[in-house]
Every structure is written in structure tokens, then in C-alpha cells.
Amino acid sequence: MERQRTEFRPEFQKPHTAFIVGLGKIGFELDHSTHSPSRILTHSSSFLHHSRFELLGGVDPREENRLRFQKTYRLPAFSSLKALAAAPDFKPDIISIAVPTSEHKDVFAEVLKLKPKVILLEKPLAPSFSEAEAMLDAARAANVSVVVNYIRRFEPGVRTMKAFIEKAGLGDFVKGTVWYSKGLLNNASHFIDLLNFVFGPPEEIKLITNNPQRQTADDCEPDFMLRYFGAPIYFLSGREENYSVRSMQLLGSRGALRYSQGGAEIDFYPIEKSDLFSGYQFLSQTAEPIQTDFARYQYHVADALSDYLDLGLSLPSTGETALETMKITERIREECLKS
Image (cartoon, rainbow, N blue to C red; front, side, top):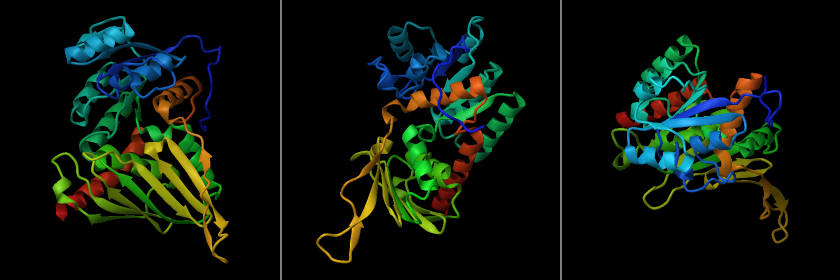
């Protein structure tokens, strides 16, 4: 079934329960200073503010994180998953895993023992493709659904943008650019996954520049190209230590789409005739904005989970779609190691 956003429905009386493993930035900290429903950037606040969920608590080995969580939400925080498993009153429907990627495999295996209905996992799935495949195989065997937190697939502005492109609002696709910083796996993967969502898998993957001075044991920061419908999209890396850059521009025969501020702004610039140069056409200086709700992106993940559990609607980001994105990042990393 195609997913359509729903509001609270009275026939669903009992809320789904959720637990957060990892009370760092995306798990809790980005929202810990505010309880405003106008900004929902973390797993914790998304379940706290959604009417179909009850947040039961969290897990984190760091005492300072547990204390902040307990003080903010007046909810229990365990030091380990073993401690959670020993608590008979805590059997959550959804468990979010928001720990460093290097810990995903082991934490995922422990969470599977708790038999939640859904695991919501931060991206990427795992440090390696083989580990990711093994994790998904184990989840299927345990009959546990896996959702990967590629937030842009859930955000309403992106879904409107996708529909606009599918209805030929951009015209014939000509070329694109993506600016990213903070690594291939950390940030570029978000845009790779976004393009997979909008266009499907790329026809070609090509490394342009390795940038070896930016390579670490865990990640790399190359310039590379992905080709869709015969047209290239160039990924160019910035420098996170100077400032974060996360933007995209897509050129089409009918105008240009600009995806800015990480996704907070999406604008279409149509073509208009020049008043100064006869016979010439330029992009309009006046944008046609696409409304976004990026400041509440994590709420929309919870909303999709609610629709999945209550209505059986499809999920835009699953373990399988994240594995397709990982195939691309693994290919690029392999090319970096060869060069």
C-alpha cells in the first residue's frame, strides 16, 4: 500500500511503546533543551510528541547522558541492554539504535533478543556491507522489521519534490551538483539515498578525485559522479572544519531545483525570457518554494512508523533500501582505496 500521512485515529486506543538505545546527539541531545513540538530532531522527542507512541525510556553506558535524559523526561535510563532485558515491565514495540556505527552490529544483535516489532537504526547500517547483510538476515529470521533513519525519505518537502519531478515539472533532467562535507558515509550517503529515492539506482558510478588527505580509517571524502537517465550528478566535498555544506541543485529543461540548508529550503526556479537580452532565456530570480517541515524531520519518521504498525502502510526507508545505498558507498570507498 502507498503511504499517506494520517493523523490520530480514535479507533487506535493503545499507543505503541518505544525505547532509545544511545542518548547522544541524534538519540536525545539535539532536543534536550527544548520541549517544543516545533523542533523535533531526535528519536526521543519524536516519540514523546507523537500521539501514537509512548516513550518508555533509554539506554546509554554514560552516566552523564542518562542523568540528562532522566532529568529532562522523568523517564528511566538503563546503563545497558542487559539491564533493560531484566526489567519485566519494559517490552517496547520499537527500539531505536542511535549509537556509533562501529557498535551497530553488536547492539543490533542484543536488541533482536528483546524481540521488538521494529528496529529503527541510524545510518549507515554497519561498517561493512557483509555485516549489514548478516544483520538483515538475522532480523528476517526473528521476524523483526528494520527501518533505517534516512530522514529525507520521510520529510514532506522531499516527497512533494519527488512527485514534482515524476510529473515532469523539471522537464528533461540535464545535470546536477551536490555539495557535502563531513565524509562519504556520514553526509554524502544521505544525498545518495535521497537520489535513489527520487530517481532509482544510478546507471554509473565514477570516482573523480580521491582527496587522500581527507581519508580516515573509517571514512573518506572524495569527489565523484553518479549518472541518472544519462545525466551526471557531481558530488563535491567541502570542509566541515570551515562550515557544513549540504546542498543540491538539479538542472532540467524547464528550470532548476535547489535543495538548500540540508533540506530546510527547496525551491524551483522556472525559465523566463530576458528583458535585457532579446531571444535569451534565464532562470527566474523569483523562486517557487516547495514547503518543507525539516525542523520536525524526526517526527515524520515516527509518523510513518505509526502508519506502518496501525495501517500496514509501506515504509519509505527500510533495511533493503539502505543496503542499496550502501552498495554505492562501498563501491566508491573501494575505488578510493585503489587510487
